[in-house]
Length: 248
Image 1 (spheres, rainbow, N blue to C red):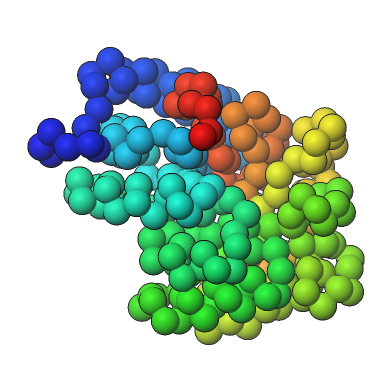
Image 2 (cartoon, rainbow, N blue to C red; image 1 turned 60 degrees about the vertical axis):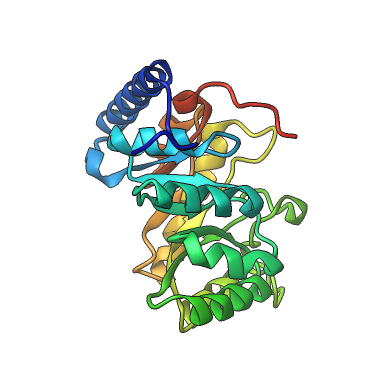
């Protein structure tokens, strides 16, 4: 790669390598403690606010999965990374507005944050128009039932945000593939309580959708607990990349 914006200093590469080694060790230890195969857990490097050069450097260190929260940052970053000849698997993990669906489906390999029937339909229409293969979708589920913080509502008959309705909309979509659930531990909840509840929801979900085995849960501070309760994808930012630059 030439001297482009996607280059990274040697000292930064060393920082990333050290962070990656620490996180990989934590994941391996958590899998061992839970009696799980390390291969069952995918680490998603959450690179919001970090430059494309960090993504390229992480890819060079063996990171295959990258997560972003905001389309206005992710779309140009994905293009810059691709221009550097690097093709990670991109996960869109932030709250998604329907009017951003057409942009997101062009670079994302998976969307973790579909939480309404209307959003599922918008993402399906966008994917059908822009992609030649189905888009992997995880339904974001609310652990505490607080609709204001995002997430489909378990046990709700609401036609737009009830978990069953959202899952059915994704599963029945032509251009989407339902792969599992995603959740964020609610504010004020201990990780043990949050992920124990999520494990219950996931077990019930898989009884209806047996192919939807992915469970995206856990971040830098609580990934061990999430793995103990069955997470297949952990979303790691600060523990891997250092303290996040301030959002403007």
